Amino acid sequence: MKGYCSRDPEWKKAFVKYIDQEREITNERFPSMALSTVDLEGRPAVRMVSPRGFVGDGFLRISKEDKGQWASDVLTFCTHAQSNKVQELVNTNDVQLVCWLPNTGIQIRCSGHAHLLFHPDNPNYSTLSLDIRHRVWPRDGTDAENKEEEEEQLNNKMAGGPMGLVNGSVLIDDEYIREQAFLNHSPVIQAWYSWPAPGRVKLADSSLYPMSIPKIEDKAEAEKYEANARRNYVLIFVDVNKVDIVNLKQSTRMLYTRRSDTSWSITEINP
Image 1 (cartoon, one colour):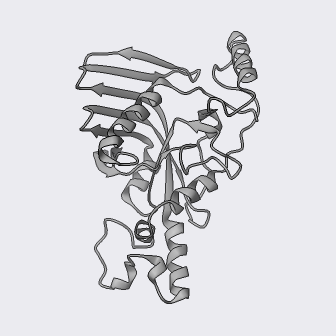
Image 2 (tube, rainbow, N blue to C red; image 1 turned 45 degrees about the horizontal axis):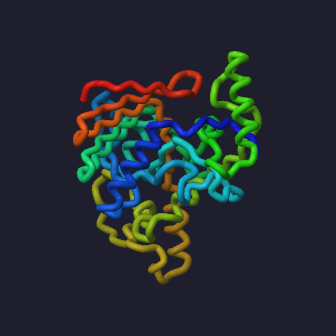
Image 3 (cartoon, rainbow, N blue to C red; image 1 turned 30 degrees about the vertical axis):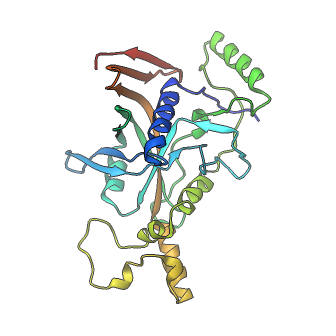
């Protein structure tokens, strides 16, 4: 299956390597990251988020047909549809995510643009504004057409076309990706999305804050809360265009910047 296949950038290889090294000590699937946005008054707003990972990795398959043969450099995280960060990202979608890996002495800073995918039943729903086909590639050894695609990419480059892109289509099911992200939360986290809007005064009615939807005995009530949780669940796709990785133990710092032709420049800069 042909598609718009960029190749595995060096920054993601480094990112995954450092996370794997940290995981050997912490057993954490993916590190928490500080998300920086701009609030509605133009001031910086920072909070910790737990990324769901990269599209194509783990449970974030790009469609039901994806058996693990596709990878991407699109980072994802989730939020409540009524949270302040949603309003901020709709207003200005420039974001920066930073993680600190204390055991390996690595700081990773990713800059890019956030694209929100609401549930179809949410009033704010619209199709995803990011064309993920431009950010995926076949994993090594899983696509028989790799060689043909590479030749086609070279022809594109020689003809002045976009390097790293191949004409055709990759089946991307945005809703499937969002649904898998939701289903792979624990029941407790899923229940949070049925709660009232974050950051507002807490209401006195404790029934509005179920700790686990499957434990609600009334079936109709459980279905209501589950529908509300799904409606409030927003998956955010970050189209990364700049990555700054500092290795304090080795006193090195690498800056990765995406070019307009989808390739990446790599520059060693002062720590």
